[in-house]
Structure formats: C-alpha cells, structure tokens
Length: 263
Length: 337
Image 1: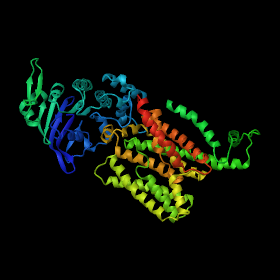
Image 2: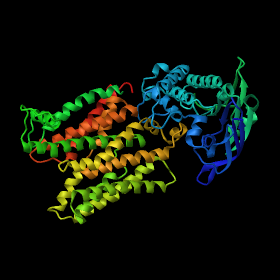
Image 3: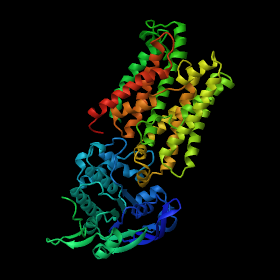
Image 4: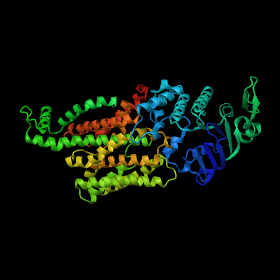
C-alpha cells in the first residue's frame, strides 16, 4: 500500500474533525475523497501531507510514518495541487512551476538550466508551455489551475494530493483538468488522492472513492461499486440518485427539482 | 548574470562621481578625479587638490557616500525580504517594531546616558533587535502561526516603544535633548564617519550577500504557509532566518543614522518594476537601486539648502509621490511578469 491510514483522529484545537479513520490507497490508484462541506476531507488531506498534527493514529506513505519526517523528505514523496488562487506577487508561470523543485536543490541555489528545461517539458505536457513567460496573475482561473497541476507534476513525487482542483472552473475546464490529471499521473504511476464534490467527476476519472461523513469513513471501495443511490443519499443528502442517460452515460443527478420556481 | 542589472550598474559610477562632488564644500569634478588618482599613487599637476579639500573628501565625503550606499542597499533589501515574508507588497522593514525600538533606545541614551554617538548607536541597535524579539515571542504565544499574527505583534510592540519614545520626548529638555531626539528620529548622514562605516559594513555586507544567496527561496515563502511546506520548505525556520538577518541589517542602519523613512518600501517596488517579481533577480536589483537611491537622496539632503535636511524628509518627498506614480502606471505597462 502506498498510503496507509490507521485509526487517525485530527482537528483544530482539542475537538477532532475526523476520528477513527482507517483506510488504504493502493499504488498507482486515483482515489477520490468525497463528502459534504465540513465533513473533514481537507483536514484528512492536510494530515496526509503532515501539515496538521494528528491527535491519534498514524499515517504511512510508502511505508514511512509521515509525522516523523522533515518537510523536505515529505516533499519528495508528496506533491500538493492547491485550489487555484492569486499569487501576491506577479511571477511568471514557469517561475511558479519551478518552485516545486525546491526539495531537490540546495537551499542556497536556484533551479538549474536542466530543471528549467524539465519544467517546460511538464508545462508542454499540460498544454501551457506557450504561457511560460506570462504573468500567473494575468491568466484565467482554468489556466492557473493547469499551472498548479504542472507544478504538482514537476515536483515528481510518487503521491499527489489535489484539493478540490475543479472548484472554481467552468464545465469544460473541470473535465480538461481531471482528464489531464488522470493521464499524466497514470503515465508516471503516481498515486493520487483528490477531494471532489461532483460524484460525476469521481465516477469518470477515479478508480476508488472514499466517502467521509461526519468525520468518519462512511464507505469506500472501487468507484463503480461504491457510488450507489443508498450510499450517496446517506453521505450527500436525500436529493440524489444515479441514472444512465439515453446515450448510456452514467450520471448522478438530483432526484427532484422543486416545481414552483416560476420559470 | 542578471541582464536587468547592467543599466543601474552602468549608472552607478557616474552617479557616485556626481555625488562625491556635491556638498556644502564644493569639490569639483577635476578635483575628485585628482583625489582618487592621487590615492592610487598617480600624482597629477593638473588636478592637484589643496590639503583641506583632501581632508574633507577622504574623512567626510567618501565615508558619507559609502555609508549611504550601504544603508540604502541594506534597508531596501530588508524591505524586499519582508514584503516576500509577509506576502504583502506594502510591508516595510520596520513592520515588526525595529524602528520604534531603535528610536526608543536612542532617545533613552540621549536622555539618561551620554550623548556620545557610539552609546546612542549601541543602545538603538540593542532596543531595535529587542523590539523584534519581543514581537516574535508575543506571536509565538498564539496558536495561529501565520505571518499576520506576527504583524499584529509587531504593531503592539511598535506602539509600546513609540509611546516610550513620546514620553521621553515629552520629558526631554526642549533646548538640547529634544532637538537631538527629533533630529535622530528623522535620520541624517551628517555624522557619517569611517568609524560608522566600520560599524555597519560588517553587518550590512554579509547580510545583503546572504539575502542574495538565499533569494530564490523567497519566491516560495510568498506562496502561503502550507503551499511552501508542501514544496519542502520548513517555513518557520526560514522565516526566523530571513527576519533575523533583515532585522540586524535595519537595526544596524537605523542605529547608525537614525530613521530613514520610505526607502524600504519604495525601492523594492522600483526594483520589481525593472526586474520583475522573481526574487533571484529582484534582490540584487533592490540592493543596487537602494544604494543608488539613498546616495542620491543624501546628496540632495546635504546640498539643496544651507543647512542639512533630515534624510527622512527627503526620502518621503521623493519616495511617496514616486510610489504613487508607479501604482498609477503599473497596471498600464506591466503586461508580463
């Protein structure tokens, strides 16, 4: 197992947000973490990345206990693609990507020409090499998220965590980023844990799913077998159902939309 | 090699030469050339300078210009570092209370100890660094480790030392002590000497060099605590390193010449305008421009009026409108990073 979580409780202050979490993610799998707002998905992601101390339990990545490792060693094993945001200073896109090489170089040095070349190659794979010299803050939200994905890939780690990478993106960009993540992580054999709100994206792009409800694991397993009406209703609320369109595409949609909307 | 640096580096010797000529005692350009040549052992009848001019040039003018370059570069570099650490382009190097602490320390020395320059300088340095240490201790008591807590702690500590400074000023004898304290708080290079250069260079030169060497990591420090941690940076340790070096540079500068307003805020902005935000390019540019800027400002301070104008007045008059100009034009011209 690449990622193994045993009886983990964690939170802010003394109150645990998640408790008694037990789960494993196998090597090379793309695993979605789903749950309602405030259910503890991001908290769990922060624990895996070692930025939030555990109240109890332990987390192992590649057989090594994360809480005992320094930041540099963690950064060589885990990369993080955060939710897209502005940078307080206007760096170029390639400079943003290059930052993820910090754990590979000496504290006093800057990225070498070889590293820059590698960064441009990763940017070419994500389709953003043409904006390498453009200011990160001047490009669109979707493009910024691609830069963040390129940064995660450039970090070149066996595990990648993505925190709601689609949350501010339009429909087309949501699928673009998920497909790219799936393809490029697959090519590198990366293990991916990704928090998502949309069960459709989970269904199309993720191998496994873990559903978090009220700080605990409500269900987990392969996506196809796990995303059922019962489980989705239990975790995401009553108004949800799985269906198949006329074209044979699996979709998760609301059970009902109120009739009195005066449309 | 940083290509953007070539232009300011070309201007540097020209402006240095002009600044060496400027002052209440006129030293003409021919004399400056002669004085420099004679110090290199090349005697020239053409540029022969009188003895008193030689004395003024080597003992007053040259150390003063060197001190202004060093301090300009030091405070500006510290400003750029603080802006990166606090993820805020409006952060100034005195945000953690170093200037307020130094001012209090200097006033304390003027009021209760001896008005000797060395005692004032030492006391200002000790209190400046003490203020930042106290701000750090106060911030470390909070569960929140974000830089904003450190900024609030800095505001609290600054306010306390500012109140202390005001109290001393209120109590001071208005005929000599008060004037001395007020003049000190506005800063001036009129007491510049080789001793002050020797006192500040061992802190400022290694400090600037360290910040240039470790400049690339500042890019990551601007990315927020968790992002930086995810990329392998131990944020708390590195923040202490950068704050420590910057604070020592600012405390040492302020202790030597008093408060120099605006420069730590404005020079990094001008540098960013010319070299972009990437800190490997920005920090050397900031250091060079800071030296250049303060050298010019001090030349203005000592030559436009019959008496010396405090340096903070000059830096504010020139600095603030220039920052306003940059704010207005930045959006129009800065298309790329």
